[in-house]
Length: 250
Ligand SMILES: [Zn+2]
Image (cartoon, rainbow, N blue to C red):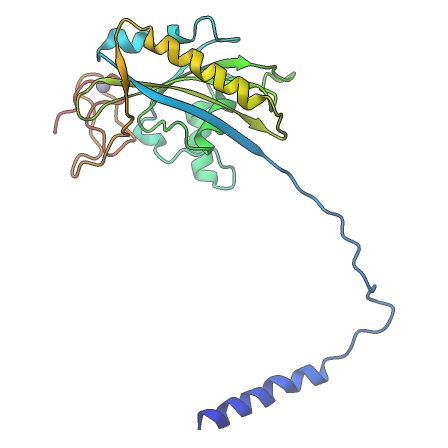
């Protein structure tokens, strides 16, 4: 039976093919002339080891000073995202996520927005728990104020260690766009070392540490900080991503 079924089906499939009219000669060229279109976007970056800093409001206030002498534009502070921006993604084909991202970041400068697009795309910063202090570090901006593809942006990303409540800082640099240049990687590595030196020079620095991103803790989602009122987008937050105080169970 199965064989008969297959035979019948094969015959049925073949029938329309034989009755399909063949294209008239002259309508279809032997070779299709295609014009190729492509865009190569190149994003890259580097991040350093973490530096443990003694927690406290003074330590977070000191973050921008770590870029003094390196920043070639205004130093901007990007705070962790609040709960209403928890889906924010710089990807225009996902309109809801893109709209959240624009609403969260339209207040920032073109340099900072470019830095966030590059560094979020390559997963070098995560604003669910990172505070990011950012500026232009090397290269030029275009007439609209956006960094050229070989300009280097970045700064210091900081988050609160879930085990101790200390602040963990790391140097982060990035670059990219419609092009790539050979010496950008080397300049980026030098700038990364300069930022790390500045972090280690902080009076609150306790030394290098391995970086552990905040880990999931069951049943701790959606907490509002009792100290500063911040509602974290990071469901696992144990310490408030904004002020660093310990979150309390409601
Ligand atoms: Zn707080």
